[in-house]
Image (cartoon, rainbow, N blue to C red; front, top):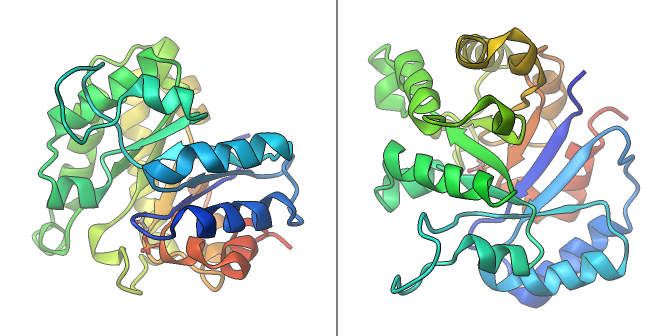
Length: 253
Ligand code: PGA
């Protein structure tokens, strides 16, 4: 059984104080950490202060970074390395978010380097994949997503793959209020799992969590989570509002 996993991607929102307050709310909220894993991905500057807060209060909320440099260290002005993230208490790194792909021109090769450097340094990784509306309309959604999976996981050995979570986020559903129907999401998630089976075999593919992302809200989470291959959600906008995020975490109540 795959444990449900709800991740809040705060993107470039909330300053340090606002971030600590939201993390505090979640730490003292009522959710059953035996039934669901929860992580939050604040901005880089908020990671260390939020980590202090989470540690001091024995929080079950895990800390994720939204991005990482593909390099170990050196003259890369403005970049943040794996060892910096480790020292800030981060356990999980998101790579390949569609905003990184589209706005910062990160290609599959760069994303694969980030994913591998994160895995080599002991992190859990969330690999985001997803097609644009143009690609969906051109009937290319499956080719695009499955190729992002294959290239993103290039050279990732089976003993490391268990630390990878996949997030399927159709780009046309991100921040737009449009969500894929639960049936559409299930169809793509099942195709992703088939691809993982071909790469790592059925046992391992059955363990890897596949999250859905794109306008997830309290109103649509249940229908999505009812699908057999939807194991959780990567939540943007709704993760900034305490009540909304908590009701997504507690979708089963
Ligand atoms: P959204 O963002 O929930 O605001 O659509 C999801 C994401 O980009 O991870």
